[in-house]
Image (cartoon, rainbow over all chains, first blue to last red; front, side, top):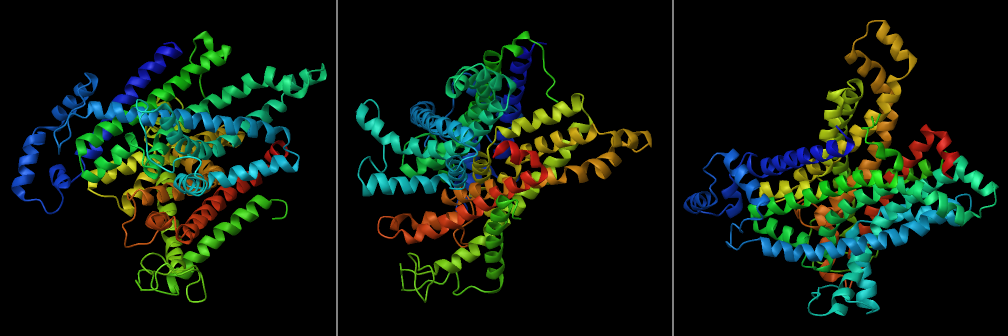
Length: 319
Length: 272
């Protein structure tokens, strides 16, 4: 089996396993789903009625297969409490979350790449150590603390940007962008603090390599040598971590949306958890997990593009 | 200690948190849940860090919060290490398809970040609790422990004395327990320290989102959540819990880095 097909087959297997985990956690744990959804004060008749409406009396394998079939055909189902179809809602909210995450990643890389390279080059000097220290401190701050702080400082005190809320792209381009800057910067700052460490150590690796010393010896200046020879080698290590960070950003977005009152997928998910609308929670969590797995697959496949040595098609033993 | 300032600083920060938690077992200046009319008082002699919106003493709540913070870290890291390390060692000893299957399975758990797992558990249970938060954070940290343990175990298994032990007729289980486990313990401790910091951050986020510890027990994340209505007028309420979360996480991160340097002195040469 080539590396590519092996990876894709494994991806399909992972999706299957993940869907079973999500389904099992919500449906097979002891306790009555309809009872949980209606809360402790519900009458037995109401619980029984909801059980019937959700089809909870039927065996779980059938319910599982129906759910999966629905996901594949784009029939994401309806809210158990209001009966409204959730697909249009999810598409709408996903757009908000997606723009937040993409801008967040942009800020993270824009912060981490120059700072990381700088602190690698200046690792024996005070300023390089200071950057490493700031990154340590940034990693220790919860994302909601950073968000609250930025919202208070930039939004309330300085009034440079809206402190929270959202304007859709269709209504006003400027309004949309200005409402996204602070949340995305929050997300990017926290991820950037983590990323700086990886950029730094990837470039320190490059600086210690023979080919880099040779390039310097034959007269290449430091930055050109780094950009010409170092970037691609460092990128190999960094693609993995940036990819994995993309996945964590989608999860971090849940918290940031909550701080900045953005109507994204994360806020929607939390609202549905509070409403105890389990079928909707099940579908949204599955979508997020799928997203994480897709990102991991893309990271794996991208190795072949960056590292020509992996294009031969042989499966490498990782050990 | 002088040669490893990272370890010393990290250790000191962690010691402060542990000390706060220990003190809270025996003494708090006020009852942490005692409501009074002295609302939103600034820091002073009577209330060291001031009072919150209900007139509760912030310092007392910080003390109790240290306990919740350590409890969550210990249980979550315990779950991650007790399940992840044996899985990693097993994968290293059985290098064929069983090992690969184990590692691939932990990869799937990787697709469930702590926050998502906690949301799932909270939804299944009707509401979040300290237990669902700890279990979710613990399960989410299993893959990291499995990976670290497997990598370190592979290194140990390539040593000559393992060959000698095999020659002497010691079985796989004996080798795993007598030779591999003691030799990978330092690396696991480093991962434990890093995971501890992550667990504190995750628990704070969950408390902030209302998916963690219920309101009756003060936690640092929850205190920030409760401070939100007063943010514009009184930053004091959110400042203290924010400071102590950062202190605890930074402490465990530095402790982990320091231990890593101690284990691998070449790291210091290459890295600084």
